[in-house]
Length: 328
Image 1 (tube, one colour):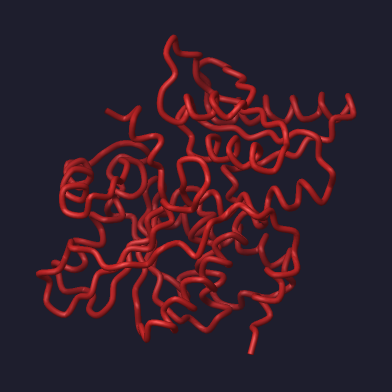
Image 2 (tube, rainbow, N blue to C red; image 1 turned 120 degrees about the vertical axis):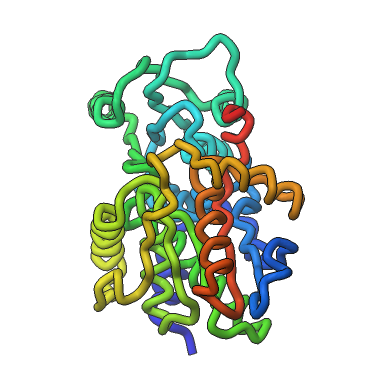
């Protein structure tokens, strides 16, 4: 029997970007922990550009853009934004012009995600150092100018952490629950990062509507717990408005949101997260970066070491490989 959320996801506009389902496989890490089976969900292998979680969001955002016959796609972020690089790749795939608004100065030598965006043909608008609000305001003004020129801009806001963008991880919940069912996995706990809240909002929403086939633990990499819960709640409301399918419970009833591993916030390592980048690569042969995934693994490792969790545990790898080259 197909669930209503599956029916909605199949019927709503969606660009074909994801090469999936993404792999779900065992990890060597944590193999010595008694009573633990550790898995990794490879959303760093989404099959477009440098890979990463935003490909799932972009399927629904660019599906919407194409359905509106948009003429240009605008996105904004810092120079090493994973979203910006993947938006450039997604636009190349579907044949839409892409422009990126960046709150940084243009470097003499481009590297990491910035280099990838240039190779992919995105037009880059360098604003110089400014805060996110000023950057986003510039993007809105640019969109207004293009609208007046008849270019039909489509704006990707808030790092794709919107109701429509979160549909990507509602779909991921369906995908992951199917993988668990096919392998006979029950009572799995999934650890994933919480930044702007879009990825975790989508997964929490999809998981709840499916009857909670797995437990969700969100590790904040930026905001305090209350702020992140508020962001997640707002995005879930946006998803509800699009799908017409109610979530029905508080976020805290459907998932656990933890802020004790974020250190000083976004992009700022803790000693533990700095070490995790190297130890995980040397254990698994898989790369993580220092903004999102390293802190998730620190939290997951701590829960396992303290005996706070048993059974099957899954690290949802959100990608970010391109940014790693500019982080060291």
